[in-house]
Image 1 (cartoon, rainbow, N blue to C red):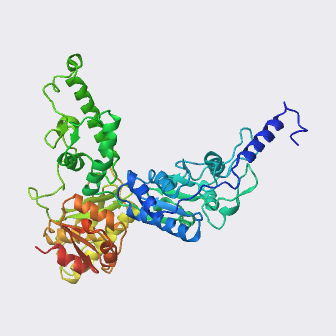
Image 2: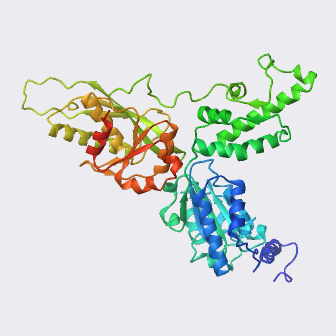
Length: 526
């Protein structure tokens, strides 16, 4: 057909481009894989600290490959907060397996053609990302990282990309993946697909059902110290030209103060930026110390400051005053009043310790008729609570009212109540605040404060059962970050807590509650 076409015709170029793509495909070419568990472990540890679940899963692939002689395609989904190494682990996985690596992001993607390719009738038509991946890597078994799979565009006029990924990420279908441009079946079953996401709840059900989800928790203080010491500081000093300067160094006390006062997020991106900022300031200080002309450019506040060692005492000279001055909103100087309880929450950014505050704005009006039942309380909530959390608040209030009525008390009936969760600029939602809100309302009704060294999480049923929740590891990390000595968890989450590493359970005593009575017994004990 190409020989019979006029070279100046439009169809000639379309047919020529199609044949170019068809012949450029690496048909049958695969990478010679490495099935050495020790070398794979070394390759993974060389660039990443922690992430034991992910590394163990990759070593399982290597071990299976060494026994059966090859690894068929798998679909992994790494879910965790930003800055925990989900994207960068992809290239390490490729190195550990001896495969080529290709990455593309689907965040905001709204066109099915980006996955399935354009039909050749369109001007500028080209294959989709999977076919481009095979051409770029020149292999049929690369490690393909699909980034931000929870941020796919939806509801556009160009189709649903999440539905297009169903064929690509289904091991029983991708052996004959059909691209609209090539229009010939392509075997993608040898590819290892690694997807990343911050929030698994945003991934469509049929899509996440095809993946093996590996959850990554945020880093605590010890993890961040090790990451900064082994990876961030050496890399930042090298980029600043200070790697060979023996006098430049960060002390462990300085790194700990930097983490506690400036970089409390679950990941290490903020910590990395701060370490790079300090390294640049050290480079400027080194240049000024060796050049009188450059020294004259120093501002007045900087003159007299010497030395290339970053310590806890000199840290403020580089990054300013700490952003976080207190671990908790209430401490020994400001005791917890009645109606205030610390809860533990999980978000796509990691775990967080949040206070729930309840107050009574007006007392119930006096009634001459003692037989007349009191009016129900009027409840208002603030703090950008979502629909699920609003319902949990109403369930908690009604359970506390029923409990108090059974005891012959009615401290909340007829009153105007206000429940607030501080940090109002941050939206909050999820089924894990019922126990915390109920405890705050019971504390308000009794007038007794809850013990100050306790943080809790768990959902509450209307009959007082404490229901299990997710994100236990992230919540325990948040409790350690806040300096809490006791955490209260649902009894059904006991196994989740016991699976945590020992260093996370150190200095924290866990208590488990099956009913709200267990919560009350612990919360109001001295």
